[in-house]
Length: 109
View 1 (spheres, rainbow, N blue to C red):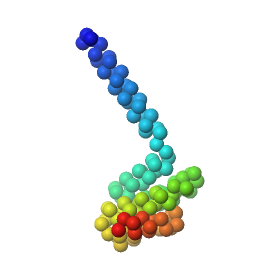
View 2 (view 1 turned 180 degrees about the horizontal axis):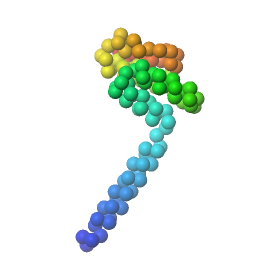
View 3 (view 1 turned 90 degrees about the horizontal axis):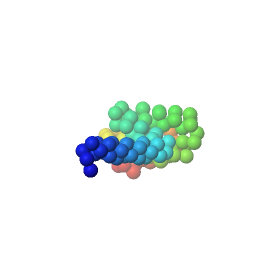
View 4 (view 1 turned 135 degrees about the vertical axis):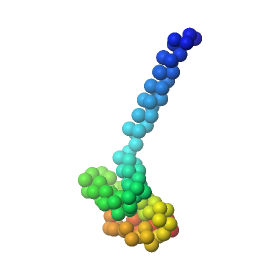
């Protein structure tokens, strides 16, 4: 193989890899994207911000409501991990998705 063709072949491989990565990113379900976004907010800000955005997301897009309990529970667990205290994590509790956040705090403890 000549040197002139090699960059082209590498370019094709990189393009194919990039296309595959883009397909995988598009394949993520909306509730998974929301969960990851909220977990990031919880870490960067606080659980209250994440819980408010969860409530807004489920109100604005009712199809996400069926995932609310699971996401809320994960947020509770993440809050305990962040603060190393169930008491501090519980201080952010609010009635989003019933009592799922509190359940997550208890599980994370």
